[in-house]
Amino acid sequence: MPVSRGAKRLKVAVVGLGFGAEFVPIYRDHPNVASVTLCDPRPETLKHVGDRFGIAERFVDFDAVLDSDVDAVHLVTPIPLHGSQALAVLNAGKHCACTVPMAIALDDLHAIVAAQRHNGLTYMMMETAVFTREFLFAQSLMREGKFGTVSFARGSHLQDMEGWPDYWMGLPPQFYMTHAVAPALHLLKTRAARVHCFGSGRLPRDRAARYGNPFPVETAIFRLAESDVALEITRSLFQTVRLYTESFAIYGDRLGFEWAQLEEEAPFVFSLELERAGRGRAITSTRVEVPDRADLLPPAIARYTRAFTHQDGAHPSFVQGGGHGGSHPHLVHEFLCAILDGRPPAIDAVTAAQWTAAGICAHQSAMQDGAAVAIPDFGL
Ligand SMILES: NC(=O)c1ccc[n+]([C@@H]2O[C@H](COP(=O)([O-])OP(=O)(O)OC[C@H]3O[C@@H](n4cnc5c(N)ncnc54)[C@H](O)[C@@H]3O)[C@@H](O)[C@H]2O)c1
Image (cartoon, rainbow, N blue to C red; front, side, top):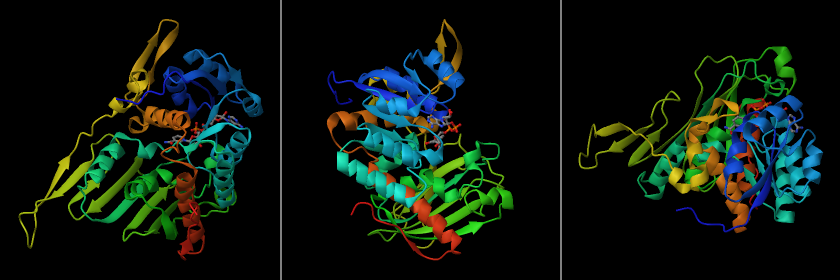
C-alpha cells in the first residue's frame, strides 16, 4: 500500500503543454495536490489544455510562474530551455521536476547540482525509462539476485525526428540519450565514468550547422565506475529507417533480460538451465507479460498507468494515460512524495547530471573520432 503523506498538499505548476499535458490530470487527481497551474506561451494551447482538464489558473509567461505562490514546477519545455529554466525555478525557491534531458551543457549540469545543494529544494529529472513496467520488472529480478554476476548491458533509442520542432534539427543524438543509458546505470547502481563514441552517417551541411554536429547517429561504449561491465548505447535521430524503439538489455551469468524489437511486443527473459553443464548448455527464452505496478500508486491516479478513454459530458472523449510503459503517474507520485517526505527523489540532481553528462561527453568523444572522454562525477 502507498505510504500516506497525510493532509499536506502542494501547489504545482506544469510548464509546457505539448507532452506536458499528459501530466496535468495526474497532478489534478493526486491526493497531495492542492492546485494545478498551467503555463504555455501559446494561448490556444493553454486554453485547450485548461478547458480539457478543468484548470482555471493559467499563465502565458514563465516569469509569472516564478512570481506565483506555487510550491513546485514541472518543466516540459523545449530541450534548450531545460537548463536555464530549472535554475530559475530553484532560484525562485520552488521545487523542480524537469523532463529529460537535464540540460545540454556540462556547465548547466554543474550549476543545477550546485543550486539544489545550496537551497536544499527537491530537483527530479522525470526519466520515464526507469518507471516503465518493463524496468520495474527487471529491477525486481535484480533485487532478487536473479541475474547472477552481470557481464554486459546495452541500450538503444532509435527515433525518426524528421518534421519535429526546430530545436531537434541537428541535435547531437547523444544529447538526448538518457532513456537508453538510465536503465542499466540504475540497475547497476553506478555511473558512466569514461566513454568512447563514434558518429555514424552524415547530416546535410545546413542541418549540421545549428549545433555543429555532423552526425544523425552516434554509438558509444562506456566504462562504468567501480564495475566490470561495459555499457553500449546507440542513438539515432535522422536518416535511419527504423520503427521507434527505446530499449535496454542486461545480461548476467544466470539470467538475461532483453526488451523486445518492437514497442508493442513483450520483452524476453533468458534463463540458464544450471543442471545441464558443459558444451551446448540449455538456455530458454520466455516472453514475459510484465505486471502493471498501479498497486504502488494512490488509487486516485492508479488508472493513469493504462490508456483509457476519458469521457465527460461537456467535452469530446479522448484517450488518456498509459504513455511510456505506464511511467507517468509513478514519476508524479515520486516527485511529490520526495518533497513531502523531505528525502532525495529517485532521480535526484546528481543522478540526473550523471545520466545526462554521459551523453554530452559521448558526443564530445564522437567529435574526436572516438577518443576517450572522462565523464565528471557530480557526486563529489
Ligand atoms: N519520454 C519522455 O520523457 C519524453 C517524451 C516526450 C517529450 N519529452 C520531453 O518533453 C519536452 C517537451 O516535448 P514536446 O514534444 O511537448 O515539445 P514541443 O516543442 O512540441 O512542446 C513544448 C511546449 O512548450 C511550450 N513552450 C515553449 N517555450 C516555452 C517557455 N519559454 N515557457 C513555457 N512553455 C514553453 C511550447 O509552446 C509547447 O507547447 C522536450 O524537452 C522533450 O525532450 C520527454
